[in-house]
Image 1 (cartoon, rainbow, N blue to C red):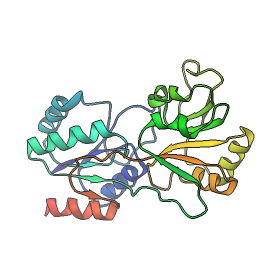
Image 2: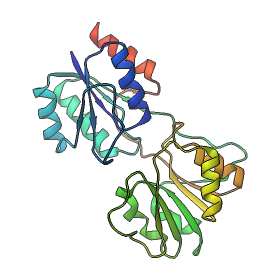
Image 3: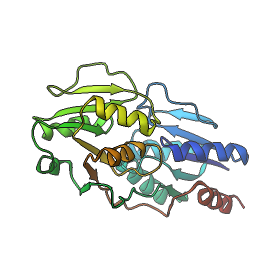
Amino acid sequence: MTGLVLAGTSNARELCTALKEHHVDAIASLAGETRSPRALDIETRVGGFGGAAGLTEYIAENQIKWVVDATHPFAVQMSTTNAEVCANSGVPTISLQRPPWTPTSNDNWHFINEISELPDLIPAGANVFLGTGRKTLAEYHVLDGRRLLCRVIDAPVGKFPFVGGAFQVGRPPFSIEEEVALFRKENIDWIVVKNAGGSGGFSKLVAARQMSIPVAMINRVTQNKAEIVSTVPETLEWIQGILS
């Protein structure tokens, strides 16, 4: 019984390793947004499905018996499509989603629901570190008049889209010390991140805490998903229940 893992996160990577160790037949799928992604431990396909129709066809042609949605918590379209396709196809699915970050009393986080709220928080002239990918960078045009620094994994092809801004090329994970050094070098006044959760990107929030840098935290969008689990062992238990 072949399963499908919608990958792209550290949780997905951990799950793929566990599936290999437990000799579970599965295929991982990556969206293809990163030019040279780190290899996963199971068979991997790269590229989109072409919407609901494409995913439905892929599931049927490959006789997929279960799907784990381990995509980024903000990959709303993919998660919504998967939930709908699996419901219509009668294929069980589950979402492996890491819990959101929560602040301590020493953090200065400002929670918002929309990027459009940022200009009310961040003053003109501020140096802003954007914890977002290049794909959604255009949405931050509302921060005109601020200097933006956006970190990307792959070297950009074109120029930075906003005057005075710049790309910072680097592949995670980054240590707290590395983040502190970067924020100090760039004289960062504000950090903007989506509440992705997990350990991979948390170092920048610890660095912000140590440096007393305020953080604009974008809340997750509520999604109509199937059952949600937060750990790989829970996911494996769910899969074993299907296979038994």
